[in-house]
Image (tube, rainbow, N blue to C red):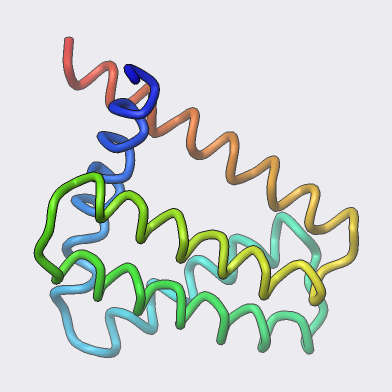
Length: 125
């Protein structure tokens, strides 16, 4: 139960961090999508075709995050929607990336998650 509360808090923190991105105009969203995709290109060595497709997937993902943030509802409901959006993005990326690239992507996500948890813990103390 404590772990679930921590995960909910983590995703609420993620939403709070993304607040500025989604409150701005379309160019701000484009910048966030480009930054996310550029990071993935650097870490995963995406080719040009992959970059374009990953960009589109990331744009959809960030749009969903913005919608989830704007919706009402409790933290647990938002967490579940965020988790579903993340799983949808993974499902879209998996056939696009090589096995090695997808593994690196999953490792990067795990490291970012741990980093966010640590930042959350530090902010509470």
